[in-house]
Image (cartoon, rainbow, N blue to C red):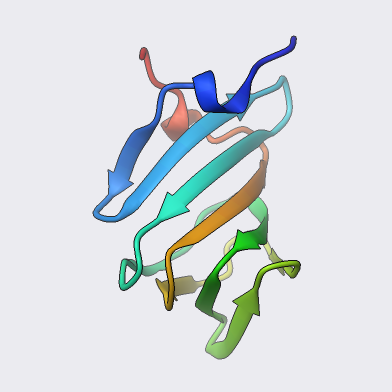
Amino acid sequence: MLKEILKIQQKEIIKGFKGRFFHTNNFTIAFWEIEKGAILPEHSHIHEQTTQVIEGKLEMTIDNKTMIVKAGMIVHIPSNAKHSGKALTNCKLTDTFYPIREDYKFNL
């Protein structure tokens, strides 16, 4: 399946976090645009995740370890790890989740 990312309908999941979602049989890719100052509350999920910063700077806390993730960096979030974040600038991120994020499937 071939898709143009910018033609995938965008959905605001939490305040300041707008995503476009691409699903395969086994994983989900999320393309995020995040507003400066937006907060990702602490949470965990069964999904293994990677977060790649394409543009901007993001403060992330994973299992009580805080780091700054900048453009060109990628971080791994293990399954069930507690994590949170704050956009220090406007950001563009690409997240990959395994298995599929069923909660990110929308009838758009």
